[in-house]
Length: 193
Image (cartoon, rainbow, N blue to C red; front, top):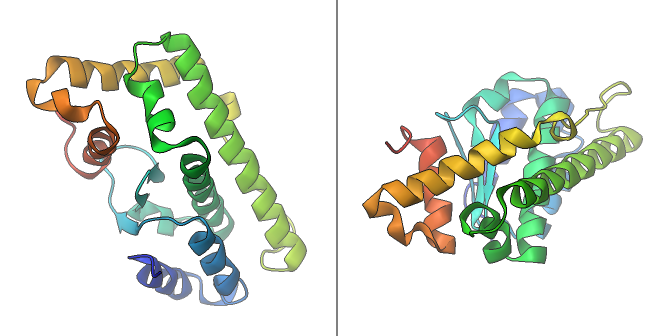
């Protein structure tokens, strides 16, 4: 089954890094296809992030194409690993940290743990690409989430909960489709007021 947006995404990679990407595009395609990612989109984010994995696909920030190829791949791998996490744990579980009435600190800790796992997986995939000769030595990347404060994750949870609680038109956001739409709206359009 073809992944909407994958061919144009890979073409853009090839056009942006023609000599660097030629060796690894087939492997990258296979890695993305194996994740069963629903779709891939590229657009300019309003939110300061490079990528956003949702249960039904991944969005990448346009500015990611302005970075070095190894960093670009690190972000792609990180978001693809989130796709695997959605399959392993379920979208309901992955989104529950943002919408359930559980302890905020515990939920933030779980979100941070998932981010660190995605960082480590992306670091390993970059090292694999170096071993295969797809990337030059010295291309190692290090994920940032292990250095992030738990307060950053708590803040995001509070922001989501506040949006759902205070906006009557968001009451239906307490389900998978709704919370996914809320995250998408946060990065794609002006933040909901």
